[in-house]
Image 1 (cartoon, one colour):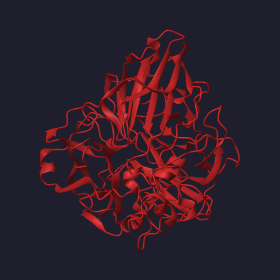
Image 2 (spheres, one colour):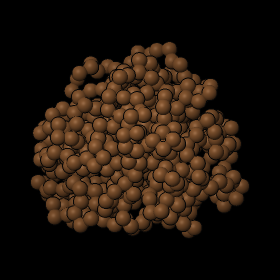
Image 3 (tube, rainbow, N blue to C red):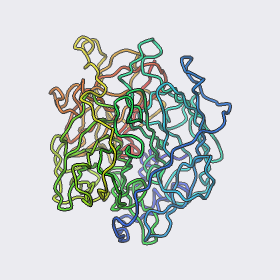
Image 4 (cartoon, rainbow, N blue to C red):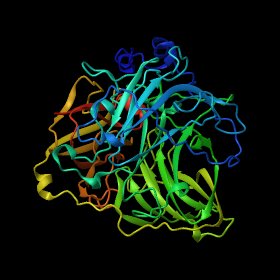
Length: 556
């Protein structure tokens, strides 16, 4: 397979030379400067909800589960990767997209662009068979050879969605082929009898991760939610922490798209590596839907599924006045304690935040909006810095919320969620230290001066040994959200000072994506537990990742 890094090496990565050198199915159909998307009336369609994935009969799987797995609770799933037609808006024709289909659902069943949702429970292992039925002769942007990354999962390396085949490690799924993924859902540290129940996630997701073409493939629709429950975050308002649950636990996949005059997806990220920005605001695959809520508490799980757009989400009145909410979780799962009276959820690409909104504060008939107010003119990133991104006077309204009648509400937000200890000074002192610099050189994105080479490890990390990584942004005004696979990160310092914000303070929250604003440097701590093998870390601005801000490390 001809890779984009080879084209750049030979100076072919722009304009017609790049497009002519690529195989036909990976050509970009987007012009250099795409026109605005067709106008659509906002808030005339209901908010859709991705369906829950349903199990299938057991099958013989070609992937390993640890010996500690409880096979009596094992469940099996099958997902079909395929091209299909979806409705983004009632005023537009059907849009050709890619997606994941539950094998229990018939081909051609009306669907949206968001994949089905996994509902998982601690200690209940899952095996997923992905069947690639994407068109091998596809014309347009997108690479029909895929992998699937379980983003936020603690899983064997072979099941993580490594971005390409390497010697002795075949992971890519070509059209017409299948691949089995094993997800033990065991607590990190289980292999050394040090299982850490405080390291459990809450809102995760799965998405394509093929080398050089993650951006177009995810943009085409290869993404979905993966929700995780246990005895605390129980999924019930009558047990555990009693957080808002059931129909009052709402997942929101936030994305931007750009469409041509026929309502088809446009994408120019193959030739413009700055970062793709759309001009249509989608929630769960629908352009600017509305959502009717009861006068009671709701949990909103917000996922920034954009390729390059940073989001500053606010709940606002019709006049644009910000309203408070309570933050309860990040990508690293439930926080130690809730953070009330927040007014901004600042989300880099791939970041998640779970918030609770109490709609009983509002009268029936009140109209609110969930809108993005970050001022981001281009793929470089937001104006301002990490601590204070610049906000627009009026934002991009993703979702209209209409407050209805009162409803019974046994849910609560307790004063303590999932407490954990901050990393000790002694543990930090004995950690192996590494530094990784993220910057742009000669038109491509690099880490420590090197573009991606997944056959070579930039670090060999010892299993279950402490590490401190210093992540440095020297990108000349560019932003980089950095995702390190396998483990959640404890943030120790930001720009030489101890992290104090609740979103990053060790002992309060953990992250699996670290936002590096212009000239930021951040120190993070982790141990790579349980699973040796090859792994990657990269920028999650997908056009930066694809060209070529990614590196491999190995756990040995």
